[in-house]
Image 1 (cartoon, rainbow, N blue to C red):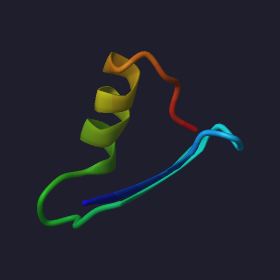
Image 2 (cartoon, rainbow, N blue to C red):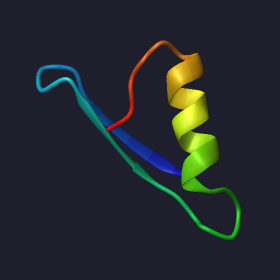
Image 3 (cartoon, helix red, strand yellow):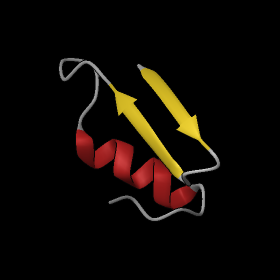
Length: 38
């Protein structure tokens, strides 16, 4: 997994292997960290 965070733009880009995780798990982790995924 690779994550690129830009604090000035208030955005993050997440690249992941679909065989190792899925978008639902990533969205849950983002929410648990206190942020709202788009």
